[in-house]
Amino acid sequence: MSILFTNIAELRTIDAEDTVLRDAALVVEGERIAWIGRASEAPAADTLVDVGGRAVLPGWVDSHSHLVFAGDRSAEFEARMAGQKYAAGGIRVTTDATHAVGDYDLTRLLLGRRAEAAAGGTTSLETKTGYGLDVEEEARHARLASTIADTVTFLGAHVVPAGTDADEYTRLVTGPMLDAVRPYVEWIDVFCETGAFNAEQSRAVLEAGKAAGLGLRVHGNQLGEGPGTQLAVELGAASVDHVNHLSAADVRALADSWSSFSLTDPSSPRGTVATCLPACDLSTREPLAPARELLDAGVVVAIASNCNPGSSFTSSVTYCVTTAVLQMKLTVAEALRAATHSGAIALGIEQETGSLEVGKYADLHILNAPSAVHIAYRPGMPLTHQTWKRGQLVHG
Ligand code: NIG
Image 1 (spheres, rainbow, N blue to C red):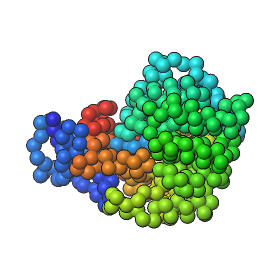
Image 2: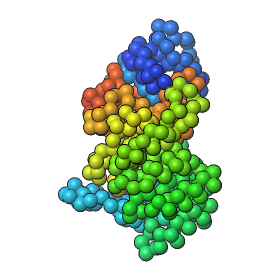
Image 3: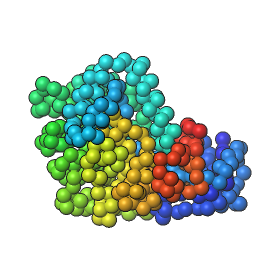
Image 4: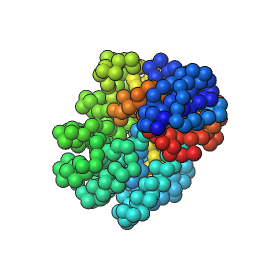
């Protein structure tokens, strides 16, 4: 089945040249984009969708979320807004709340969160385990996550359970826990931070994941300077996420990892994406990640929601993009790319999605606005008109 989307006021392709077409049309054949061009030159199709003079851009690629959870930590948030510091210990509160919820209810929560993300224009979704923290629960969370997310990350090394020795727990993560989650996950992650896992433990987690055939991701430099970013680059991680507290050497290491990369050469080597999480930065009152400095240094920067009940309870990538423009000083084009194509690079799916190009998935975000500039120009407004994932309407 083919669909012609026409009367597109602005088509933001996010291709290598950042092509923006006016009065455009786009044809979808099955799951993929078959044609893009001027509306007046569009070929016929089985179905016509009149976009009504709206803007179309790629669906958001949310490359960092923690959706497998139950419970509420709004009291912790309120205390933080009154001056208390964010600390990793709250993760254990959510772990207890999630253990208490059965598969049926947890699946309902997950489906609701996926629907919320789609309603905000997200078409590709990564999510993590990390509120299980024992073998059985981590495996259950990985299994349930794999039913709603496009890709799942194993984050057994999120925090050390209370009353447990950190080295002993690391051995559990890298042994029986990794074996139990392996059928459901593509990535391994570690929270490399004071109060969570040190450099040696983080290295052990990442190396075990690599040996098991998983891609690597790191939570690094969220709460202070530390070894997370350099470890991520050294081990060839696809991304290091948070990056609030970077030294000059961290920025250099990230930039060096991209020195042979070219947007126009799909076979050029990828480095470690710096994933910034603006909603989390605001909700934890940490300094905003230095996205501007990273881009200027030549680092590929992604923006993601980090949706979780502790540090960032929103799946709105639109909000994150707005914040990146208004507060992190990215241009609109840079922020849009960070939340689409660069997020796709962070997940290794940029050949399939993250930009609107012939042959890629028809993952479309149609705005209730004539231009994607409105995302930052009209902050907080509900601008998602429709979301299409692989040629299917998933919201609107
Ligand atoms: O990415 N930093 C560690 N993990 C989450 C927070 C989880 C929580 O506080 O529940 C994050 O911010």
